[in-house]
Image (spheres, rainbow, N blue to C red):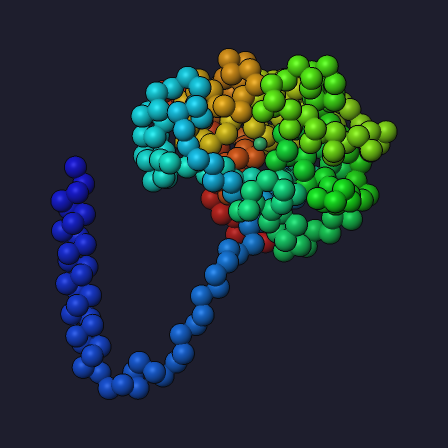
Length: 332
Ligand SMILES: [Zn+2]
């Protein structure tokens, strides 16, 4: 156990601290008052991270984190104690799961493409930093040419509009997976859904109904924007779509919600999250995608990975692991 060394260490630090305090007390008073203390900033610094894939400039844009209370239903097919241990092994609390949101902007040189749009500040008080982070990244929402959506859960589509229904990206063409549209905009499916699930259907209507004529629907497997190919990754939702981004001889994988919290679902790809519409299908898709990412050694972006949400997937004896990217120096 680590308890004893930790206590011993704490005691040592305390003793040293006392010695320092005594030494400081012996100094003349001006040594303390020469400078005013710098005020604490009290807020997080901008959450943006840039790297290159071939000639493309990629910008990960953070939209904050939702701290979801953890209960024994969060992972549908694992013992609660195992789920809590997986979190505590990662020095995370065991009563909440942090679920960060990070969208991705791809500048191809001629087009600015946004993959998913964040929560629009409409989901959790600790999320909704995307527009401030875009501003910090020097990206004007008016300059976004194309929006590509992975699936219709609110944390991916709500950023399309403000709370009062104004378009956030007025010049962007919006592209969505055809099977997502078919599912979420189907009144019969909405009416058949249990009460708790109806909100997501209504939300999809709030975002898309009045702009339906402008929304392009694509079948997964096609190129949706220059160098960006959609990949059917069904299971999390029935039309959930991932994207391969390729430029020159480099490529990366935008996993969207193929896996939620990586310390749970990358390490244990067979675990099924409460959010997965078809848990078995989602687990199957997850294993295939993680396998491909580890074999091809390509950068992946996971929408709910810890910021900058970009890394590599390594194979382990039990499953896989996320290896975060190393911060890239300037210039890119
Ligand atoms: Zn999501």
